[in-house]
Image 1 (tube, rainbow, N blue to C red):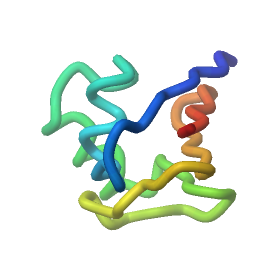
Image 2 (tube, rainbow, N blue to C red):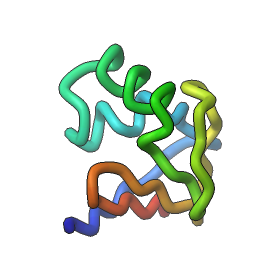
Image 3 (cartoon, rainbow, N blue to C red):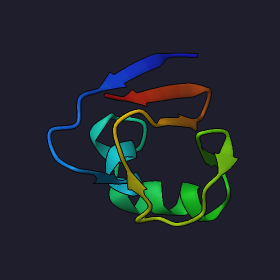
Image 4 (tube, one colour):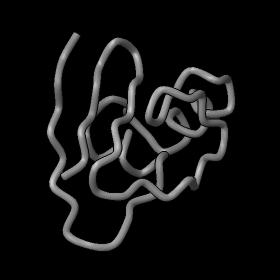
Length: 70
């Protein structure tokens, strides 16, 4: 299990883009598929909206990895 810190330099990032830029998914399509299958949690809740807006202070869990957005 890895802890990944992601520094956000704007108001938000869409969930599928976050999975791609952090390297947890090889492509946006792979990220969208994982989200649609209920494999991604945001702040402890399963998130199925691909373009869910992720903001500073939120945590995303996928594949045993935790991404903390700051």
